[in-house]
Image 1 (spheres, rainbow, N blue to C red):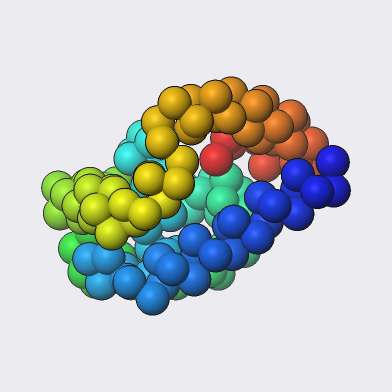
Image 2: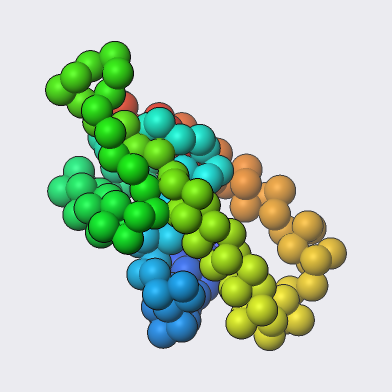
Length: 147
């Protein structure tokens, strides 16, 4: 088990460093992760639920949201159900930026795709998804949003 988790951690670090060096669409990885989360799970989330899902401090999410809002990639608006709260929506520009990064990653990381062709990805993906779902079940209470 340690060897598996160690490999996953090393792969994550290598890909994180590579992403940061390339900075597709001028985005930091934290910015892309947040845009991707909203694209995958839906708009209208509150910052606290985003922080929980991404397992980050609320302050880190607030900072990231401010930077993305300044670039016109998200809209942070009052929560219609609770005027004290906020909700986050991807703008058209934010969705386009996220989609452009996905395409750019496929292009700029072509060597990774050659090392792991689709059939190998499909073979390993179910086991990795199973492991992620298992780990999701052991989050702290309130951290139930799936990443």
